[in-house]
Length: 180
Image (cartoon, rainbow, N blue to C red; front, top):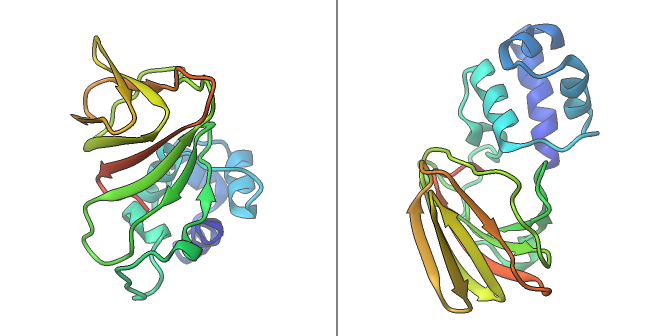
């Protein structure tokens, strides 16, 4: 994930863009963008999408490893990471190759963790509950899921999740489109 910050700065220099110009194109503050380029702040997927659009590249550009395609994700390479505005811990499970469509993760939700707002974005989401329980709200319906149960829905509809227990919930999440 550290290379993302370097690639943002590199693209900005290559395109002869100032932080102020990038700020105007993304509607993100100059100070925030400066922190991102220094690796001093975490970056939300929505902010990364704005940056990618401003540079005219796909988000996958920030995660590509220069033609280093691999199909296997060995356990020693599965590193946990967090995203801005989320208490969840994510572990990427997929290899890397062109035109990949799926984004599989292990997601760990803290006890009683709950989204604060409904989300909606392009694609689909699939969750398999490995440990604990999960409440998933999709539009006006709440689905209570326990270990071994699944849910699959279009992520274009408003949705959110909640860990209702006093223990960590662990799920396998598979989403489209691939973003990392």
